[in-house]
Length: 332
Image (cartoon, rainbow, N blue to C red; front, side, top):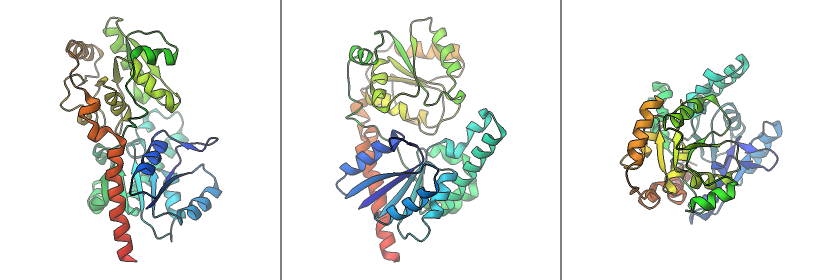
C-alpha cells in the first residue's frame, strides 16, 4: 500500500512538515504493510494543486493532516482521483479558539472560515479523524450524526527512538543550561492561548523552588532534550486538542501537571505521579506540592507504551487504510 500525506504545516524552505508529519511518515515507512509513504507539502501556491493532484495518482491513499481552507481546496483539486481520501483534525482547525485572541478583523474572519471549511470537509471526506474525541463537542451535532460512521480518532504517538531516556545532566548540557529544577512550559508560537501567565503564577506560588523552562520555536530534534531536562511538565492552555507534549513527557517518565483541557484528563487517568490541576495558581501549587511528595512509581514509558509508541498508533491507522482500500476496490 502506498500512502501520501498532505499538509500545509511545513517548512517552506526545507520542505519539512510540522514535527508530527515527518514522524508519521517515518513510522509508516517502517510498517510492514506500507510499500511507500511520502509527504507532499501545500505552500499556498496555485501550482501546489496541480502537483498534489498529479502525485496523488501514484498512491493508494491520500491522508490530509490539519483542516481549514487549504484542506478544502486540496479536496477540490482531488475531485476525480478515485482513491480513498482522509483528513485528521488537530485542534484549532475545529475549535477555532484563536479567534478570541486574533489581533485583526481579517484574522478573525480567516479563522472562522477555516473552521467552517473543516466542517464541510467532514461531510466530504471518506473518513474524518480527530486527535481526540474531545473535539467532537465543537462540531455541529447534525454533522456528527450524519457522518458518525465515517469518524475516527487518530491517537498521536511518540517516537521512542527520538524520545530516549537520558540523564538530566546530559539534557541540560545539550541545551547549554544549568542543571536546576525546571518546570517545562511548551508553546509552539508564543500564543496567549497557552496561558504562560498562569504557569508563571504557579511557579511563583511554588516559592521559587522551580524555574520555568520555556520551550518555544525550537527545532524538533531538540524537544527530547527539553523534556528530559525538566522535573515536570506544566500545561495551562485555554484550549487544546490532544497535546502531544503530554505523551512526550510520559514517554520519558516525567510527571505532568495540566489543567483540564483537551484530552489531558484521559491521558493522565490512573497515574499516581501526575495530576490535573486548577487554573487557580494557589490551588494548583498545592496539588503539585502534594504529588511531588510521593516517590515516582508510574514508569509510564513502559506501562503506557502500547498507546504512546508511534509504532503502535501507526498500526491502528494502517488497519483503517486497509479497510478503506478494500472498500474502494469493491466499489470500482
